[in-house]
Image (cartoon, rainbow, N blue to C red; front, side, top):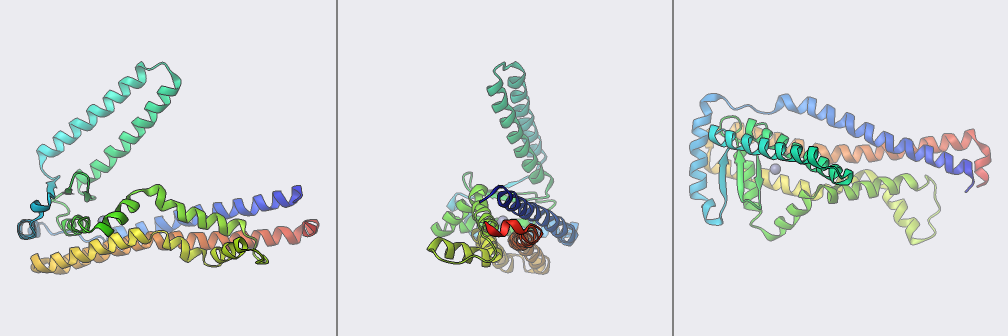
Length: 298
Ligand SMILES: [Zn+2]
């Protein structure tokens, strides 16, 4: 490869990566703008009946027997304790950053600080009731019962799924975001570095061409563990809603549908982004080749 070919390849692959991030960003923005207002809100007069249904669910499904506990983040004492604990942690790291002279240790502490800040943000979402969750190592379902009691059913679905060894393994994979990103980047890079019209001589060429041809679907499939976990939690949540909260079934069905669409939108956007990036890269590579006939020799 001569210098011009290297330059042209770098430009086309760079444009592909840029297209991927742009499409992903625009896709997320669009989905968030469209889906956020559609999130079902719970009428105030349904909070108490739902709380009763949930108490019945906890008792009848014997969640305590499998050591699953429930934390209601609308409890003012809980909120106060959390805020106090988080402020204490942040203050303690800040103090260490100021007193540490070693620049490497300082950098490490700054990383710890940013991580703690991120955790605090997630915890605040749980306290404010913009999100609920199930934490397996604590065996806790965490939901704000005043704001989003309907989220309890989905999180209980996760908790029950964790008792299944296969789903537990999938969950662990799913929780590790780095592992989840790997198939997408492997697919994206393979698609981008493989030329549009390559002769498939070796087995590696054949694999690369296959990945390139199906890059959109393969990137989407990288999210399969997440799709299985979240779909299963919604189905179990819906099953529990039918069993314990018949009076609010319409609202709960809407909530589970909304959750399902949100979780399926993410893999679709990843697939569309990788597919678009590949197409744009090939187009750019083709244009550069035509505008620079010398590179045809290489
Ligand atoms: Zn979930």
